[in-house]
Length: 254
Image (cartoon, rainbow, N blue to C red; front, side, top):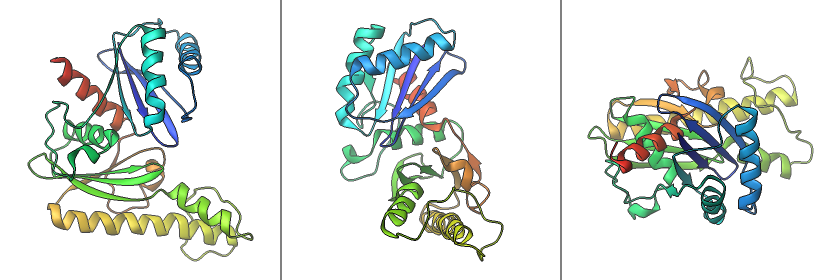
């Protein structure tokens, strides 16, 4: 079995793959101060609750929080007796990268590209709704061509709520109409419809440079925008983990 770990700035997603499918998947808040034992106790408990044997054959990770990497590495070594492989730019995973410098591409973005390429024909635009919303552009040759980064919807809205005393925090919910009749409706219109418009505008500009591209969404809030954004065609909740699976198979020679 494969243990795949996607460490984001806000959440960490862990998946277990049995060679045929993802048989378990869990999410927790990312804490750079976690120790290997804290992570190990949490993970062991979830394996037990899911009825899974406490054993994996391999482990791979895409991390954008370097401070947490040593704890994850030690957890896999001490608790699971496996070596944790971190996906890095330069790994021979069959993905060409056109980015400066190439090492600056986040491991999660590489994984997204790998996951997308095994499911869709390029050109492809991957929109990952996380702490930051990232656009990953994959050209017609299957090369990672770059992309765009903008503040995530949660980060943007929290900044607004924190600096505007009379504006309440609201649920991320699509309004029925663009014209809000209450403060809550007005905020939901601005946040949800405004952000959807930004996604569509960037996707259109990137698509104009790539050529006609399929636009797919992933990330925690991606499903909320699937019906709001005219550009989004599919939602792939496990895309990053799928990409890590592809990377593992290619690095292992499978």
